[in-house]
Image (tube, rainbow, N blue to C red; front, side, top):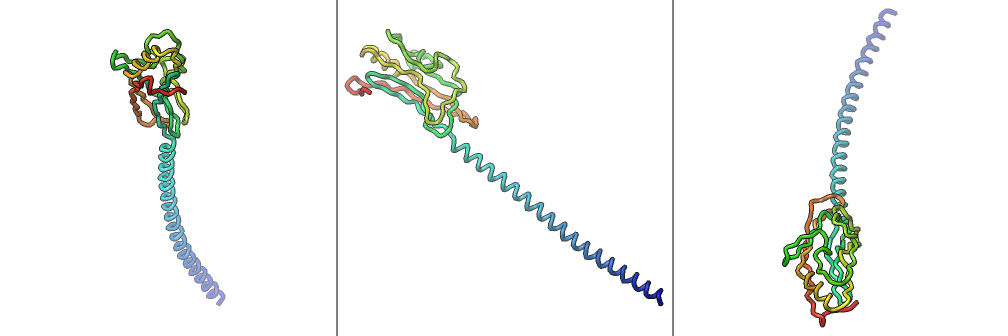
Length: 198
């Protein structure tokens, strides 16, 4: 009888072990499916984060674009030409070309195209021809020339010459986006009766 009880207990233990292993196998299978699902969700979350990061980078790139303008101040007692950055990001100058359509001269600085007059010019580029990679901050400007003509003859000579000049500016932004170009013909054809004094 004791043998039968021992056999019965062994059979029960075996049955319990088999049942436990079956349940554990089902649990492990469900856990494996849960883990696979969790991995897929994590992959999806990573892709979503990448897409959001890409959109944020594009937004940042758009948000910090420069907007260059050629500003002309044309008064009886002052003539000035500047590159103004009216955008929200830094303007990186790749190349500046000043072209006189009458003489067919191309120079890297505006001052080299001005006529000889008995007067000093003020230029803020310190007579350097290399303005490659110079930056103009948002809201700032780079003065190309600033002249206070000492008489009407000097004023007329300067205006006549400047009216034939076109400025071409190749520029980019801090993200080194594709190069852009700005062209502006300088217009100084005001008569002395049309002018303002600052």
